[in-house]
Length: 181
Image 1 (tube, helix red, strand yellow):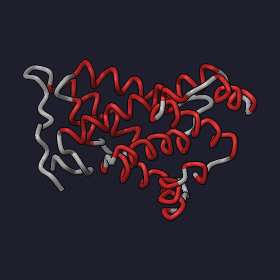
Image 2: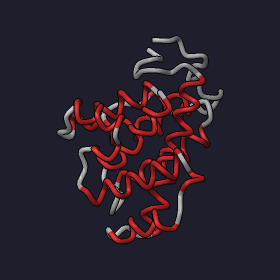
Image 3: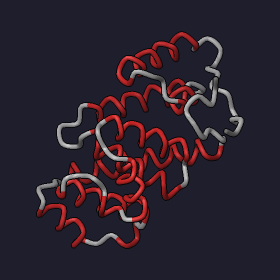
Image 4: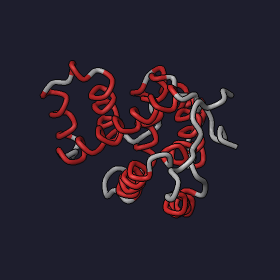
């Protein structure tokens, strides 16, 4: 494991506020993910991101396995070790098989998800990884499976924002949970 280039030290005078936000994340997730620890260097960004995650935690149409698979496959393409291993752990806890997950890295259409969710997954991957190639027909396929504009936009937004976190983690050499211990 690399030594992170930045330590998760909150600004002076904001330590307590950061600690409260991280405690809330710990209650929901059962641990404090290193990306959230790192965001503590900017309490405003940490607050905004925890609110963002809270919204998706209770999303009425995008379930945790679908969201984890979106994070996972984009992180795999981006070679973000932290997000790949963390997402694998979450999905294995939810009953998915590691071999199936690894196969999905090579062929996302084989992801162990219901067919309807695979349709949205494939669209979101195209939107995030090959945005210039997205066409109206791609959205029509999702609409035919019952996905709405809001679902598509929110799924892509979730994935793109996690992709941004991947980039920061890679740049700052945070490549596994516990990097700051």
